[in-house]
Picture 1 (cartoon, rainbow, N blue to C red):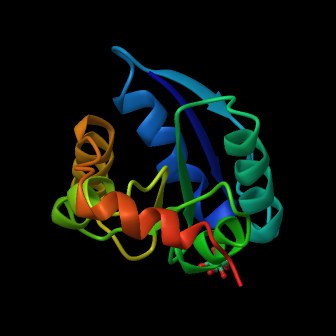
Picture 2: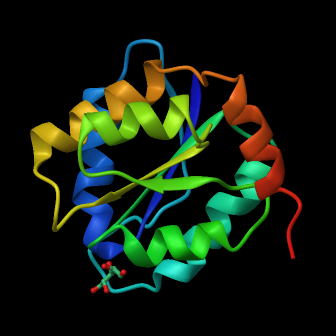
Length: 143
Ligand code: RB5
């Protein structure tokens, strides 16, 4: 599975760890950032949105300190359904009910093992469809 990943400086180390941990069956497209130097999370939320819109990858992962700023940024774009998850249960439901195409993580909030469980669950869980499909379609209607 091809996955696009992006973070700001606060999420940099977790981003690197995710890529290192998930190798078998994954091809990573890394949009940065590439160091601990301070950067602005909206730039990386936008980069993620462009990649998802262009279908560069099936799914994405975004990381900042809390996961909040970068998920707000990415969700401003219609192609993105980013879900900020702090447990594997949330990651499963984000896929099953919300057909989320981007997982958002907070590196300063969620512990390493839980973050890895979130990634694993998010990648192997399918959308449940049915009544949830109607709700996803409503999300796309906009204002
Ligand atoms: C950066 O210090 C921090 O504000 C950012 O990573 C994120 O948590 C914002 O929502």
